[in-house]
Length: 499
Image 1 (cartoon, one colour):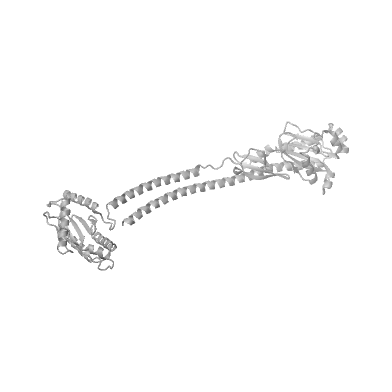
Image 2 (tube, helix red, strand yellow):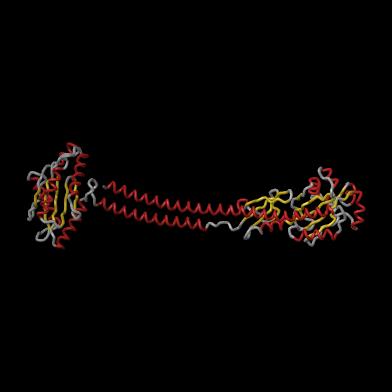
């Protein structure tokens, strides 16, 4: 049916668009999934790298802190520490390469100051306090007694760290806590930026249970200084490939390039009692190449399919328009224009191949009374039913058409006169029986006229239609519900009888 065909064409069109949209959306979703998977894998790897890098730097610092603890134990047990003994110990501390410098700070009480100066052979200078006057007023001061460093710049021996406002707080905290204390990142006395770790040295065998006891038993401090650049290098060495490492203290960068928070991962780095944040960025971040290729490929395929769908839809629409232009809307049979085209074609084939054929004109009897009494909807159902009757009795090569109203026409190719009469009689009987077992349409009959064409018959398109039409009207004048065969000679145009 025409409505069904239209719906089917529209369904195929929208189904094609839905498939195209699904392909495009699917490829975009696949690209996003791939991108998300790659990003998550990269972030997990970068987080693991940050933890591993911080662990490497922390382990490196811990090794040096363990050596510093051994040095502090040595200083604690030695009664008289010479420069040679210190440098032997310092050499072992610096050989691992983790410490930039090491030193021994003595706790010198004011009463022992002169003896210390004579024993060391050099003055003790308090730079921050302006010289001796302030040192003399203090009960105890903390000069650098021995120092060694990888740097060419040597720390100033005799410098009183107890009067240094930057370093003294960490010194005193180590003295009172009895544990190693790390400073914030600051300028090292041996040059460069770094971290001091102060480890207290108490008299051997002294009681250090309370702060007062620890202050009284203090002999000095073993000091180690870490270069933040070396710490960053130690962190980088734990990760394969080139990575950017940044060391942060209190939210501020103290070493390394500035790293955007969204592009780096973090891990804590603890040295002694202080914690820093180590940020790491792996430049080998996932690229958008593969996801972009997936998305571009999918969208390209979708565009191509959309173009094909449009072409197919246009072709289907053209075919549908052509079909509608050649098809009767009510019955689905061919219309008058298409019937005339097919009749021309069959006449030409008959002349070319020398075969016979027949043209049948069919008109329903008293159909006007059906419309007038039962209404046009009933008349339309009746016309559609008769079309089904005709369609069911035709061969694939036959032509069945509705010319308009209650008038139908048939072309029977390769059919002789006897066969044409038989087909016409069968059609008349089928129309007569139609509706006998149905209550929605009345019983009707049909008048049928037959015109033959083919070899030995003079005639063309107009003559075939005229003869068939004249035979049909002869059937109506003969009482209707009958079949008449056209006479070979021309006949005059009959008048249309009523009904």
